[in-house]
Length: 258
Ligand code: SF4
Image (cartoon, rainbow, N blue to C red):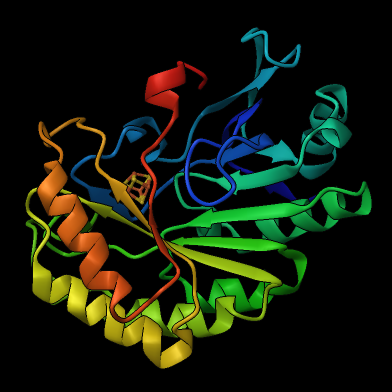
C-alpha cells in the first residue's frame, strides 16, 4: 500500500502566487533538499515522524497519526475536510517531488474525486515531475537564486554555481501541465545578474509565462525585505523581457490565516 511522509493536512486559503485567496486543501510533504535563508517551514526539512490532520475545516483542531500516511487515509481526511468545497488540493512541502510515487498516487486519487491539483515545488526534480505531470492542473515552481539558497548538502551559499539550468529543464516539462507559473522570492541580496539570467532562461521556453515576484517575508536569517524602489526596479527589469510579471507578497502574515 502506497504511503506518503506528510507533515500536515489542513484546509486554508492559498497565500502566494496568482491563485492567491482561493480555497485550498493542503497536503504538506516532509523533507526538503534545499535550504532557503528565509524558509518559514524548517520543520519540513526532515521526514516527519508524525502527521497532523485537521479534524474540522478551518478550526485548527488536529489529530496526529504516524507516518507514512496511507494514500487511502489521506484521501479520507480530505473527504472529511470537504474536499469538494476547495478550488484546489495543493501538494506542497517540504518538497513533494522527493516522493514522486506517493505524490502521483495522491494526485490521481484526489483527481478521481474531482479535485484540481496544484503542485508547489522548488522546481528542480525534473524526472520526478515527468512521472506525474499528467496528474497536475497547476505547476507553481519557484526559481531559486543562489544568493539566498543552497542545497542541504552544501556547506555554504554559492557552493553551487546556480540553479538556472536545472530550473529551465524543469520548466520545459512543467509546460505540459494546463497551467504553470514561476515565483521568485527576492531579498536585499538579490542580484540583477541573477534576474537577467532568470529572464533569459524563461524567455527561451515561453516569454508569456506568468512570473510572480514575491518580496521576502523576513524570517530566520533574513531580517529585511527590499525597499519599494528596489521592488519597482526588479519588476520593471523583468517586465522588459517577460511581460506577464506581477508583484505579490505572501498574504498569510497579513491575514493570520495559516
Ligand atoms: S524549498 Fe521550501 S521548504 Fe525547502 S528550504 Fe526552501 S522554502 Fe523551505
